[in-house]
Image 1 (tube, rainbow, N blue to C red):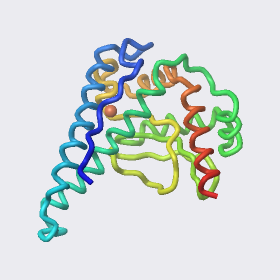
Image 2: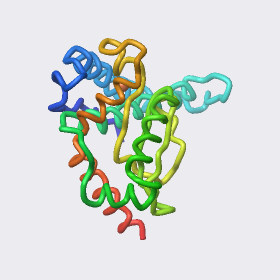
Image 3: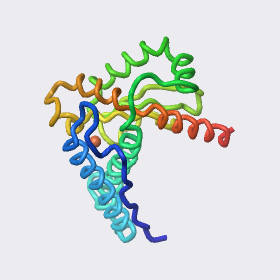
Image 4: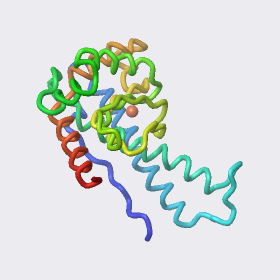
Length: 204
Ligand code: FE
């Protein structure tokens, strides 16, 4: 089946946020659109690439497959990120809080650890629901396509690539991480968790 183009989603968070400038959000959104365009470009090339020439050292097929995972990661990560920005921060309620408290030593400890992960990662930090172990877990990734765990659904995604904060904070990444949490919409995170838990029911 020939590839059907993805189109870029729109997000209410592409505007001035508290401590994250409109320019940062607009530039960042353009990067996201670049990932969408590259997924479409690569998928179309994959429709007609010479599979007989596939080779692990170098081949067109290898280059397309490798970079496709990077481009798809760039789409999915940013769609999670932009969708849950634009909120009022604070603390989560309901099931998100319950599960954080159940699966980590406590909310404050989880938050401190997640912020440390944001300083340690080169690309992303995710809070994900692990469907095999039935727990929330924190994961770091150094690029769009370094997902360390299979069968886990990210419910919160924090971009720590420099493009997410350099215009506003220079190298003071910790200040950006605080701003990220000040703008987090926990209701969207709660919806993501509900969706992950609904998938859990399907898996059983
Ligand atoms: Fe980004």
